[in-house]
Image 1 (tube, helix red, strand yellow):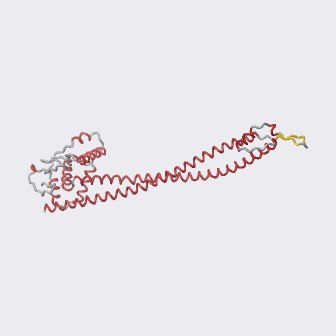
Image 2 (cartoon, one colour; image 1 turned 180 degrees about the vertical axis):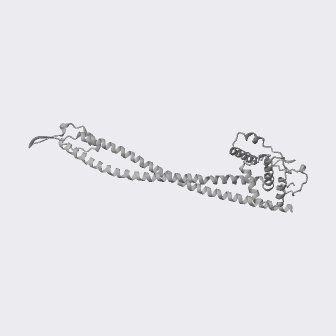
Image 3 (cartoon, one colour; image 1 turned 45 degrees about the horizontal axis):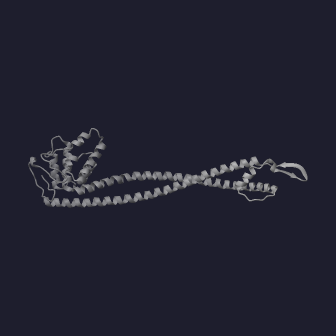
Length: 331
């Protein structure tokens, strides 16, 4: 049997030697049972694993479809090629083995009338190529192939979303820890501020005493006051009471130096804690950006699923229309 590709009526052929199918773009002539021309794949099968081989064959078939080359399904078919198997399963599902011409095809194929002897790969290729050739146009095949690629991306998106969700949970836990740390830092900061106020009052008091002894009153900053008190000699802090000959020494240089060192260390600690607070703020901003990306990915997935559904629906309508035309021609 020979099926028309461009509106030709189906014909029944009883001689195996005369069997032939032609298509200018999709397939080349297969005569006297058909010959496989997959020498390039046969050479590479010994060096590629099954997954790599299937991906290579799928890319080769897709490249031939896109470039419009003289490519045959018999030449490029492989059970490891996901595109071939997906197309075959789709066509068989649509036909559901109910049309008379498909039953004749499958019966002749099972009787090995059109195939080389003991060639299982050729038999698979023959069934697939004839069914797809007569039902789908090249543009429809490419649409189905694009839909398959989109479906693969959709299948991978839940994994990416799960990874993103796990990362969001980790960042959320880190944020909670940073909040606790920030709270403790604020408590320490308030404590140090109170201590600094007390130290400032003490320094102001000693500076006032120093200025009174010199009968000089000048305003100065806190650092200048500390510098002045630290560099005073012991004699400057010796006071004589006119009514009492005893001398009281009031030396505070060592204690002031120790307090200044503590103050400097406190300032360094505060600076470090402020850096931690800024880092926590940056982490929060990154979490917000990640949540925005998650929402954008969700919208993109929804749009991609809608486009895939529309393409599959149009492809289904086109296939059903061609089936009705073929059945009308056959009847």
